[in-house]
Amino acid sequence: MHDLERICTGLADGDPAVRLGAAAACEAVFRTELEGSRADWEPVVVTLLPALMRAIGDRHKGVQVHAAECLQFLAYQSGEVTPALRQAMSDPDAWRAWGAAIVAARLGCWFPEMDGALSGAMGAEDRDVRWAAAGFSLQLGRSHPEAVSMAVAALRSENPLARKMAAYCLGAMGEYAEVESPLAERLADPDRDVRRAAILALDKLPHRSPEVKVRIAALHGDPDEFVRRTAAAVAAKV
Image (tube, rainbow, N blue to C red; front, side):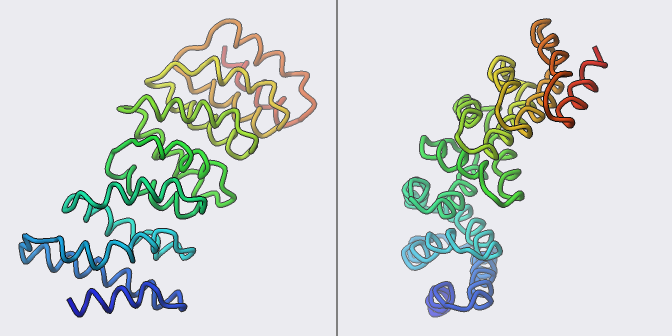
């Protein structure tokens, strides 16, 4: 128990390097305990869960990742983890909500609270976060239709980054979902990057309707050069 208390203290330290070391140590302790065939994990959960739930909102990505991996493991050991994750995904702190969504997505679960957490992450300034959120959504959409609905809703977000990423995500979701109509709406998006993403997403679909093919070809008159080039390249394949 002494090691667990030291980890808790380290996760709350003001030095990011100390927090990172504590988060890595937590994973190492879990591996040791697992190899030792520990049966009663409740004392571990009681001691570490509050600290780990704070750590998934750590601005240091390494700390957040280690904390997410620890929580993913603990979720299989205790029923207390999932309610804590759902509460964190509703947190006003979008970064902490994203950290909790990472764990839930890795567990293959879908909860209503993931809607805002994942769509918000798809509009993040950090490119890695945007693509990770889209990847999780794509994976979850295969067994959870709610993830597809979330991506469609994100396609109408006020945030152009979220709309762009949702378009790319839905283009890949076209393997298993009907998404042509919402993507076609974005061909008239006010943001040129979203229009271009919509063209590329529609190009990935197994089938496109004649009406959509015509709309893509009509973008040869788009005011943006990159959109015109993308539309011309896709139209030329028909």
